[in-house]
Image 1 (tube, rainbow, N blue to C red):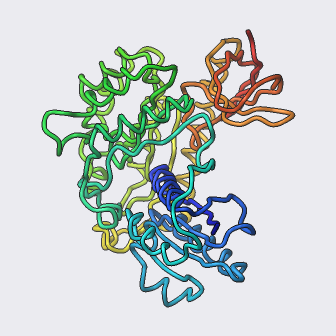
Image 2 (tube, helix red, strand yellow; image 1 turned 30 degrees about the horizontal axis):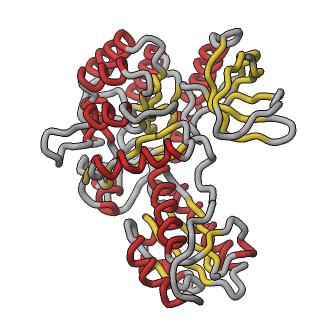
Length: 425
């Protein structure tokens, strides 16, 4: 049986794409493995959202090419969608290139390498830990933010049929998964291309699935979070009280240059509305510093905004100048050293906010989801922790803990981003 492995880079949406490819190839009779040396075929699922992501993808491809020996090396995803000809020319060790949403073409291409007829039974593999699964509810984006290349790579926004999403969710819950994480470029747009069925409707249908599991929402456009959505989150216990709302900036002039809607006053009003309706809600946001023409005063206003709101979780990106985007040709590009200073200032201030918020959790008990266990320690998450981007709870008394299970934990220590805790009955 021919064996393959998949290396996944980039966002959770890529994780979903890799999982779907693994499922498809497994059903065709190929065997998924996690060790490079065991594989006949190496697939790399790439990202090119910003310069750092491009560099990581290229480094991974070059490393695989260096050690490929008699293996086949295939590259797919965003980087190869955008730079197919350049990759073909610059890295001839790549045996084939595919774009995004190319699973069918990859499977068809792989049929030439089959060494037996017929499919195989479903084989066990691990893309995400046994505790959670990402569910992509839409693909593409129609926003046209001036800094973002995604619409030209993944196309216009397209909702995935609710029946398909609900069926996938049911399968995950039945298999013991404890957290379903809904992702898209912008999940607040879900259903805009369906007749009378929007994100709150999908959430209610998902909440009606029987079982003990969490639902987490990632990537909500601030201006489209309406009262119906807020109430849906507030009223359903299965939806964790955690909202990820990328705002990108607070100053109206910069927001307009970014092609973003909303104003600082509207953002503050929305945050107040959410916190009043959903007590204890965790709010996460992301911001871009060093956008072209960003003045020092505008940056300081952004810092003041962050201080005023006191976000529970915060991510910061230094503006990445991407060819093919409207912002690429803007005058007034900011020097890298200024971007770095602004990035460092916000992250330093947010570390203080995060530490204070974590200290407020010490001495309290919470339900935690166990992501990882070894002989000496375990890593878990509370409702206020999204995987891969937020902190974790480090548990030292592992006992009979198993990854993928829930446990009651007492928080004993707080750090800037992580917590320490112990299992309690």
